[in-house]
Length: 248
Image 1 (tube, helix red, strand yellow):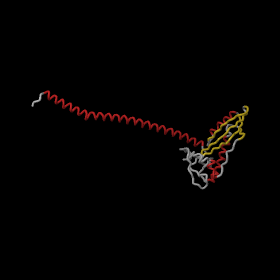
Image 2 (cartoon, rainbow, N blue to C red):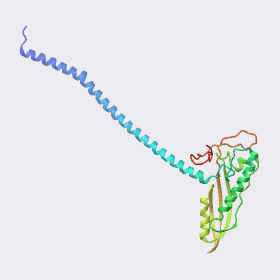
Image 3 (cartoon, rainbow, N blue to C red):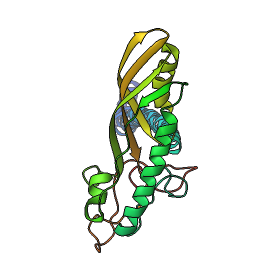
Image 4 (cartoon, one colour):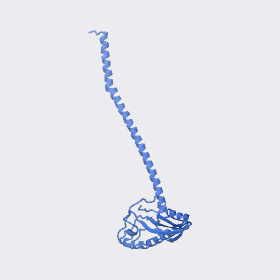
């Protein structure tokens, strides 16, 4: 049977279209869909990578802030806390309770000398000034004198009461402002009252001293019991003996 030319052409077109359709649906379309999926996945990866970079940047910034705050805190520790050595004017709480009674009295005397020196700053005349209280006995010394464990770390808090001074206005103001710069202690002077006629003035104000004690470990206030480790604020990271305003 002889086929005409048109039949041959139609058959050829049919076969070509079938092949083209098969190629489109079996090869091109799946590849195109996969390519789109790959493109979308790449975009998602880029978004996640961007998030990761931002997260890493936030971590770096946070670490920088932490380091800066730690540095600031270290300076406070160095300048505003008593040393952890009795010989240097501070106190070491990691001794037996009876020795701590003796050492605490010496620590109190050192603190009183520091107070007596501070209260004269500015060239004023001291009319009257309070005394730092003496420590108590061994069974309750840590609890009552160093406020532990009522506070999570050992600290002395001396609400000393009223200081009375005389001098010029400039001398009195310099004297009151100097308390904020007192070494080894956080000192607060408030309630200032000035009387008299310039330049002969008298003034009164209240003083509170706070001393954060560097104590890695300490004996409890009950004689013979096991040592305890206080919790609390951060320790200095550089430049100061180990210990905490609180603990290590």
